[in-house]
Image 1 (cartoon, rainbow over the protein chains, first blue to last red):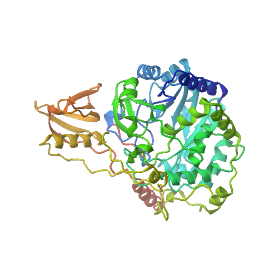
Image 2 (cartoon, each protein chain N blue to C red; image 1 turned 90 degrees about the vertical axis):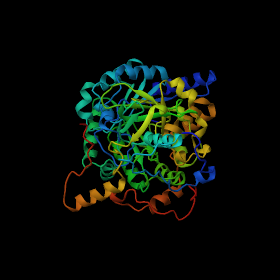
Image 3 (cartoon, chains in turn green, orange; image 1 turned 30 degrees about the vertical axis):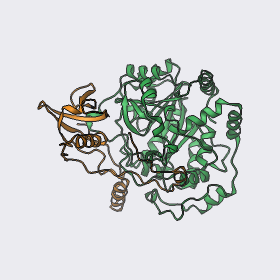
Image 4 (tube, chains in turn purple, brown; image 1 turned 45 degrees about the horizontal axis):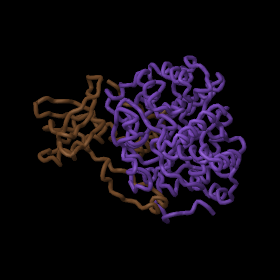
Length: 372
Length: 142
């Protein structure tokens, strides 16, 4: 696992402290959306489709700090929108560093190279660069030719300046697993600390509603991608969450683990569903009908979700919450997950151009086992 | 969300190959009839999901252009409210369902026409025409 010891220590002691205190619900990562404005217009993104007066709004640094302190999570992810479009993003980041929060600033990196001199490298700050695959796949995914090259320029400059850098990718139906594995080789070659990945999810605010994998298909894709790992690959995620994606573990969604705060308030119930807003984190915890969400609820809105904002928290809590979980996490860090079945899936996966990236085929059968 | 229909069993979910997604209605320009309490509640629920501004006409005659981002549904209209931003005021505002006389989906639907298929079609056409640096650009902020 490509996470510094100090960060692991902070998270593990936080989990243990809450566990010993008998807390039933506590946050691990605050998803802080300081604005919805973005410099990309990715088809299918549900985060940026707002009228101009909403896109012009942004959280002040003081609002950001108040949310972070109220939430208390040791890690803060700053997605958006594009955070580097916020005129006070440097002040926000510096304020969070002063509060010793581990920050993942999620960026499309179109502005990264230009803005880097304004930031100071810190163990608390990671630039998490949106990169959805190899050049053609990424450009097609973000609907902008040339986007990959700009992002890679930004990554290389950030690495050269001594910043912590990860990539983060979302994979949709039709993703070529062989291309993804080649992409892992490419990004590790750029000197990034690790890779973050997630399956796409059909949340109902996204305008594109036809191209999402169900859970069986997600497990099959990630088993093909994440088995037979190369020694150079590092993942900035819980190994147990990766096992969940591969179908080796089962977790129930923990939506309060990564709560979201933005210009509308505290979002119910999670980062991707928008079922309303409340004014305080306490109110979010106490008034959300949590039993209406997650797979066991039967809620169709949650049916295909295997996204980290719901499922990485229980993986982290298991990893740092018991010796059994801890040893599983250590084992997962060094395990290459050899699998002949996955090799066969890779050999059968047909390479294709990005224009066919998300072509959906009617399923021939209800469930194909992810294990041979 | 309340009273969500329980549509899937655990086994069905785990075996899901493709997620069906959600249908988006074409609501731009729509003026729903709000004669009954239920009509008004349903219309405001759609307004909550709508990715554009709406115009609320209050029983006082005041007209409010608003982006509705939140709602609370209580037992009566007086107990229920929507929360919104207007294009001109910086603060969040609330208005009770009981005060609303008319609703119009007056603003542009910002989610319309942004399907993946639209992008694939446009990309292939531009590529075939020999264009370079093909891209979608964000909507203007004026």
